[in-house]
Image 1: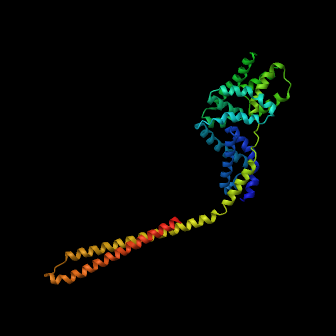
Image 2: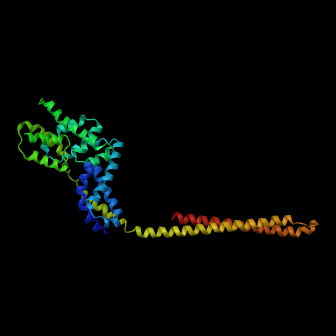
Length: 166
Length: 170
C-alpha cells in the first residue's frame, strides 16, 4: 500500500477516532497520542490491511485496546489532570458566556466524589459502553450500572437539596 | 407528565440504550416542559454535555499527515538495509565457522604431535647418551618447530578475531 493510498483510506477516520480516545481517556494530549500510536500500528501492518473489510470497526477495535492500556497506565500513575480536563474539554464546546455556569453544578458534584466513583461516572457520561467500562475497571456491568444510576440520582438530589427544592 | 417522569426515571436508572439516550437528549432540548421538570432537564443536559464530541486539537491532521509521510520515507530505505544486514550476518557466520575449524584443526594437530612425542619417549631404548644425542636434537628441533607453528596459528587466530570484531563493529 502506498503512502497516498494509506492516507486516503485511513486519515478521514481520525476525527471519529479522536472522539473515541477522548471519551475513554478524558485527556486531549493522551487521546491524540493514542491516535498517533494507532496510525503507527496501521502503517506497520499496511501490507496485511487488504483483507480488512470494515476499516472503521478495525481501527476502533485497535484504538480501544490502545486506550485501555493507556487508561490503566494513567490510573497507575494517578494522573491528576484526568478529571479536570474531561470537563474542560466539554466546556470548549460552549460559548464563553455559557462556560462559567453551564457545567458548574456537575463540576462541583464530581469534585466531591471519591476518585473511583468519579472515573466511573465520567466514563459513562462521556458515552463509554458498559463493555468498555468493564474492560477498563474490571467491574461487572451490573455493578457499574448500579453505581452510575446511584450517582445520577445523587447529582439531581444534591442540587435539589442545595436549592431547597426537595 | 407521566410520560416525562417515566423517561427521566429510565435515564436515571440506566435503562436506556445509547440511541434512546440521544433521542431523549434531543427531546429535552427541543420540547417545552412543565416548570416542575426545568431543573431536572437542566441537570440532565449538563450530563449530556459530556457526550458532545470534543473539538479536534489544532493541527492534528497535519501532524498525522507528517507522521505518515515520515514513516513512508523511512520505509523506503530499510529494504536495502535489511538485505545488507542479512549479508553481513552471513559473512559473520562464515568467518566464525572458518576460525572455529582452524582452531579445532590446530588443536588436533598439536594433540597428535604431543602423543607422538610421548610414544617416542616410551619407546626410547638407546644404550648410550652419545647414541641418543642426535635423536634428542632432532626431537628438540621438532618441538621448537611445533611451538613456532602453534605460535603462528595463535597469531593468525588473534588477527582473525580482530578482523571479525572490525566487521561486527561496522
